Image 1 (cartoon, one colour):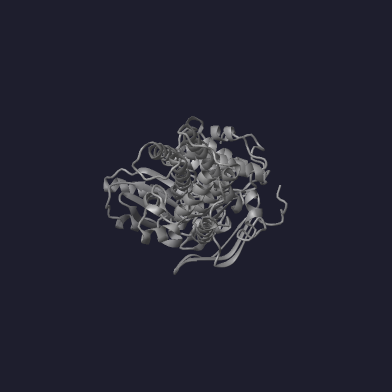
Image 2 (cartoon, chains in turn purple, yellow):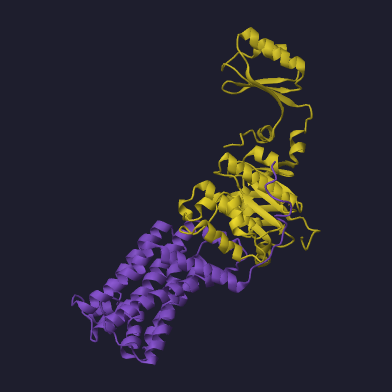
Length: 260
Length: 312
């Protein structure tokens, strides 16, 4: 055999990389992959921005005054649902199909870091969405709320990302990629239409409103309305709904998520 | 190199693994000595991947003892994984990831990684670094997977069907890589259903079928079990009547048409036997083509032990 490899090339020098470096490498890779994916951009940025413009300028959907502020609160909720739930579920479904979880689980990455890297990437994508949506809203005439409102908005967006992210992992971690793709899009559409996102809960029939009030989508949209429009702390009931969904989904996902 | 050189790199005894009512591995034993290459050889469904995945800590054993670098792969996984390199069957990557992004990510998980750019170049992936993983060919995905297994400078690597889906050049390269790893003191456990691969690469071959070890030893030990047991093979018109040839050959030699048009004579083959076969062909008015005399191969050993062809 030819000497393609100098002796000593593969002399063992094993060891685990630095935790911070591993976390950063994984989060950066996953963030870049999301932002490079055309379908993800359509779902997470283009559709929300188009809806924000439509709801702010046109009178098709009933939106309370101040119109741009109310629309911004709902679209921020939609953006979180789009990327943390639908985008995450679909990406995870196909990541499993292509064996990347097993690939990464076979490296020195501890399991908790594998999850942490995904969370950081999800938060990074949401941060990009928030900057674009808030920028568009400001151009449309949105007036920034008080510092309290902004702080709560940030907290709610992080909480919403974690809760919907857990729901996304629950869906994307257990089923076949094609089924995940179909379900994640259907759920997105249903939540958008009657989940308290595009239409306010108060415009729904009473029997439906009772159900929708308990959904994480309505909870996030209403809580963000308090923070973004009123500039106040949100109704703690909404926060509780969001936390309960997230904790339940996370606990279940730990049991059901498969690597491959 | 290894902090525990007194342990074999991998020690499996009495491994049992069931999936529901199916027994995938049924009391398997194997030992991979540090710095050597062990090939787990067997047909699809023999339990090779299951065995490897138990050693990697991906699956829990239902019975038996597994020690990898002296550790329990299921319980001590976080301590074991930084020391091993894994090439899972069929590879693995984000569907949209580029080869260099994937390899750099895996390299970031290691303390002293090899240079990813060099490794991509060596594995012939430099020209496709911008192609998303899902658009790479099966062979390219396999080569990237191999790069991911080696980049962390592991002391032990598991290669599950490392040459599946590869063209002959890439296969040759993998063989060279495995030889280089061995020369540098890396222990290698690979699975294959190709006997020439096992014969060429391994210090120790473990032949498995239906979850049990049917034979093990060095390639030489396995094939030289009967030192003067050779075989003579030739191709000719199918369906020849072998009665006269059987009568003409000495006692103890077996003749059969192994497959359509391929005839095999087994036993003590000497120049006289060769002459008998060729003169019988002349009497039959046929030309014996591709006539070869060889020691029995691992394939013959496997066929003898299980009654089945290895490539299935």
